[in-house]
Image 1 (cartoon, rainbow, N blue to C red):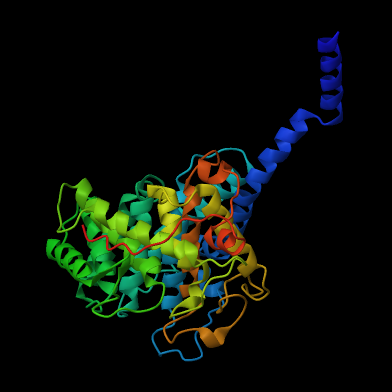
Image 2 (spheres, helix red, strand yellow):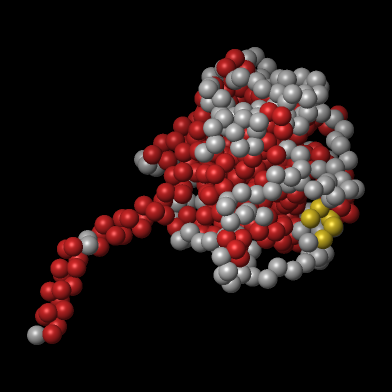
Length: 413
């Protein structure tokens, strides 16, 4: 009799609170973050790729340069917008097609991207990029090479032979540009690593000297100097750790050894990631320090890169990092002025703030913010997306909760 009573009460509970609805609600909450990320990435990407796929980016993109613009050719804007955007979006475009809303968005982006890649190196196209003259060209050509390394099956192999030939010729033509004695060595080396990857002749000296200089410039505790001096900014995340690791990864794939291993470089990045995550305040903000703050969410390139490809440090969880990054995105992109009326990004950090742009910054530069979206290359059922959201370190600290103690780590070997 007791068992029967329990069963009746349990059935009434199920009827009042349908289990299927509860499960659906949990699944919807977990899917919300990914949908927000996809929709934001689509909003950022669509004006660039839709126009460039038709050869109309130069025609329709409203160019905005820093009030202290250094006088370089403004046509570099289109190179920067396309190269940086593709380097961030590449992993997402590797996922297979499906009939979901995200799948349809991704398929459209991939189709636009492949047409845009072809236009970028076709001298007869109105959107042929600025491959000649400017030192800045080396930087953004490297981001294009990196995009191919991040998604060769989706973005490099599908290109026709003529387009591939044109890229290889353009990349090799940039060897005449002398890189700066700082993180720019990585741009030159990334292009050589790509040439190595696709079986073209490459400059081994460039790869070796870049690795040696980066090792000389390693300071400890996850930080590299940007050249011989330390610079308090986010270039360790914007460029240094991810590009260095990409180069070492290609070399290890080709059984080439440098003076440091890929494993060591990744461990250094993970130490940096521990510090970077702690910079996110309980209110989902982070310190506005150093140059290139107009790159917005690109500050978290290394956290996104590790989440996508190497996994996060043991000191943090997927739910913690996803929640932190989503919260910062929402805080930043809820501010009016990030986008102009035509849909292109505008100079600023949170909103339209042209006064903080550096002398080399145009609104094409800002598409480095797309680097934060690398985890979209993980399928929707990956733990990064399905894990319950958790408080990040500074949230827990300022709420009196237990946190991991931080300590200096040299990560020298």
